[in-house]
Image (cartoon, rainbow, N blue to C red; front, top):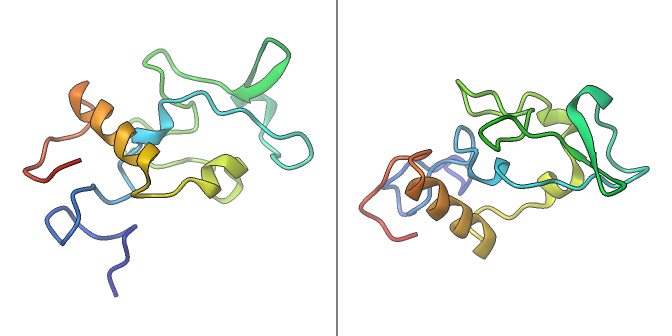
Length: 110
């Protein structure tokens, strides 16, 4: 059964499949103390707030640049777990990623 997360482009959705997209991975992710258990090597502190570190291109360091999949998916931050595919933020991030050439353009709306 096809779900919104696995639906290919053109299958009744204007969004790419979640797996392999990575559009939402270009934002600062604040980590929640006592909730998120992320290896220190993947984190950075901004003004006293622990966050996921970002690569030189702005992507989360846990995003594999080749596959565009999360390398810590099973223990990803809670905010990533709660992110709603197809919601306003998702659509905005997909649009920005397409504009910046990180995702292919489609004939569908964003």
